[in-house]
Image 1 (cartoon, rainbow, N blue to C red):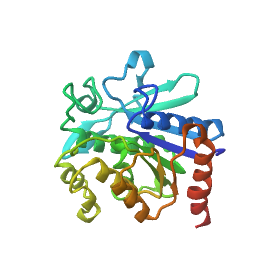
Image 2 (spheres, rainbow, N blue to C red):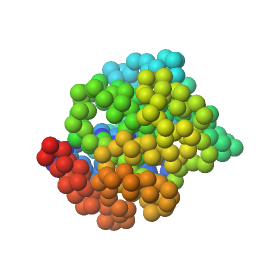
Image 3 (cartoon, one colour):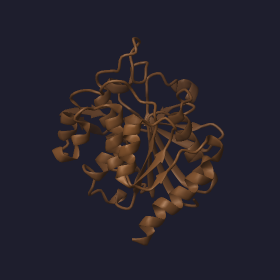
Image 4 (cartoon, rainbow, N blue to C red):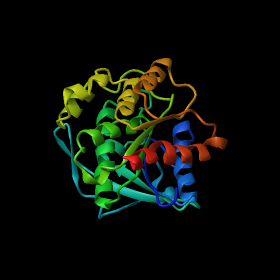
Amino acid sequence: MKDKRILYVASELMPYLPETEVSSMAFESPKMVNAKGGQTRIFMPRFGNINERRHQLHEVIRLSGMNLVINDFDMPLIIKVASIPKERMQVYFIDNDEYFKRKATVVDKDGSMFKDNDERAIFFVKGVIETVKKLNWAPDIIHVHGWMASLLPLYLKTYYSNEPLFKDSKIVTSVYGNGFEGELGSGLKKKIKFDEIAEEKLSLIDVASFENLMKIAVENSDAVIMGTQDVSPELEGFIERANLPKLEYKYPEEFSSAYEEFYLNDILSESEQV
């Protein structure tokens, strides 16, 4: 992995949020790359229940300050950073007072999904891409973890398709079983279309369910990693039909060498042969 650049975009990440399959692998995979001489950048949403004082988050003024247009509204983008203790890994947090100030992640005190989770997901992925552009950091691989990052492959392949920084980047999506019940919101498709993404690119999210969000991520990715053992048969079938390079689920104690080999031999070697 020496000198390879891997961008990690995650819905959740240890130690900032509790341990789950997503937050654990979003932490362990960049840790592995760092240990093997690669370079990483990690992004996650700055949810309001992340303790900024304890984790020593601070705003990066030179990266903050732009507005992102979400559903015809200008929303200020704030970038904060923190370092994971003992790991020499820096994490970038996508923040906005309207979307992320509330003291929760994606559900309210009654367990209901926030009605603006669709806009929060769009804001998050656009914020990541715009920040990486400001950093002028061209990743070899972009690795997506979790449903709130699931629109990133779509935006890279459509809205940002002419962005030279990502022209050689390969996108890999890790698919997990832990999502959400119901729909993200009936307006998601319309809000994405505001960014002039064609209707035919969005048919998979006529219903914005967890499974359909993961399908649209897979459809716009170059490879897939099975991040869990409990993926639904419907989603597993969709992944098989996509006919992409795929890494089957690996237990935590055996993932390291498998991920490294998959990155180098199944994803990057393919692009180097072109």
